[in-house]
Amino acid sequence: MADREEYFVGFDGGGTKTDCVLLNAAGEVLAEHSAGPSNPLRAGFERSQSSLRAAAEKTLPSSPSAPASLERASLAS
Image (cartoon, rainbow, N blue to C red):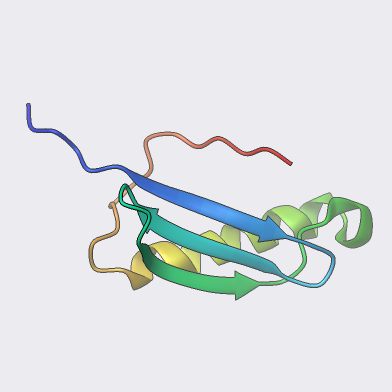
């Protein structure tokens, strides 16, 4: 089995916008995009989840070297 390259997706979410970035294992930025607010106390839980999803859906396909799917994710606030 071949070694798989690792990628990392990071979010910076707030009350006005959510930034998303895709990095490779070397820490190089491969893609980045923004979406709406993702602070659940200001935007509500449904809108927050929608903004996180929108930011990721814009970021991941915009890099030709991005993975076709994510194996796992870990989010912390």
